[in-house]
Length: 146
Image (tube, rainbow, N blue to C red; front, side):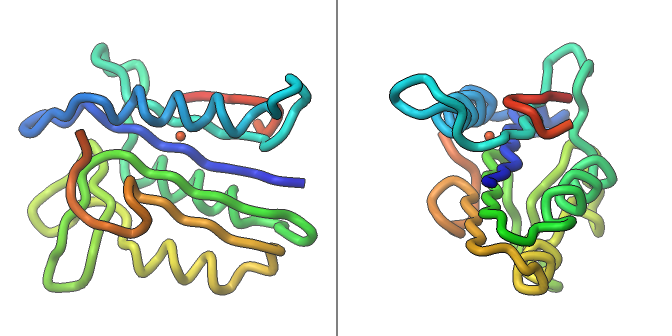
């Protein structure tokens, strides 16, 4: 079994981005099926929306990460994030839509702790260009959403 959490955030109140949601949707599409159309990865897609219908907060992202890494035996796991990243005095953070000055989102240290403590066969993390920080110009069946 192979599970993926794919996240794209364009809609930040003070620093909107373009292309992160499109990238996440494209990654989710590629992962969800093989070239012959058969099912591949089971993808959980979180994509921000302009109308606020899907707001990716710190709590939402932490909850989905916890779900991704739960019961991973004999499973390959993949986490993809397209959105703002930031360096703080405490380390690198994946910035969520509810960011505040001293609470930017989800710490990359927390993501790596979940991954390292996981018993998954393989673990993959991609934040745009594999663990490169900054901003850029992806229920378990098939693709689920916000």
